[in-house]
Image 1 (cartoon, rainbow, N blue to C red):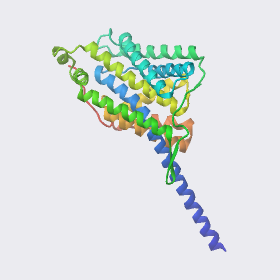
Image 2: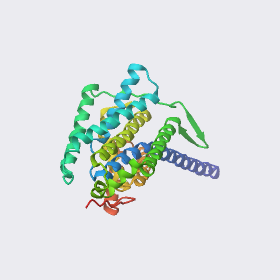
Image 3: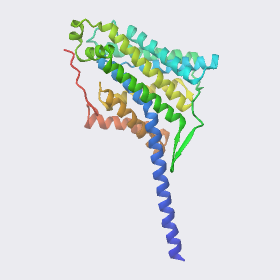
Image 4: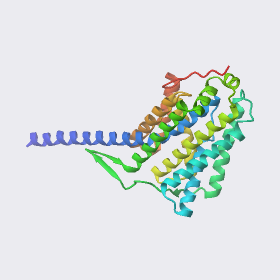
Length: 311
């Protein structure tokens, strides 16, 4: 009798262990899929830093602002989710251009602190406008394929997360094509590598930078709409965490490295969701910041460090 009880006890322990393994793997996988939004935000930060050597702190704010305009179009015209994404991307593209013209263009290139503080001011302004317009209340955001669920063995994949990952993948591929296969991309990379030489070759620096900010804004608008669609809610309180996550992804991936931003975004998404499952939402962000601290101590140049010479 005791042997039978011991057998069933061991079987139950093994069953519980396998269940936990499946649940943890599922959580990490969902996080990796959602991490494509972090990757896009990180790519946006990386593009701007690569072009100017400066951080645009208003970037995530502009992305969420675009998502709000897309949501407004959805509410007023009952527009489909694809149109909501398109409007969000277009508005954020315009916001990126405005941020460059107001916070970066007329500030001397060598004055990094002034540009940083100007973009922080832009972030606060965008945040306050959104809070006043929405009274700070969260709003439901339409989703796509939210009822779809695919089972692969013991694992399940949410349809909306597949959609988010697919949109992120397509956006990244298109961006890489633009950067490496078009004249615009060549001009952008030339400005990033050697601004003075690019000017001597006839490249309009301000025009190229404004387009770079607009492209980054486009990616941000897609990421903002993707985040809201995956969560199902859009709120002003998302702006600051998304800004911080974007900066963390940029630093971990390596400043100026687009492949690094992609890998770091997916990694941070999985890492974050793992601790969300293990420790809960209250401690989740603490471990992500701890991950940043570890990288700053042991690998300060990130996964793919890239030296940018502007002399």
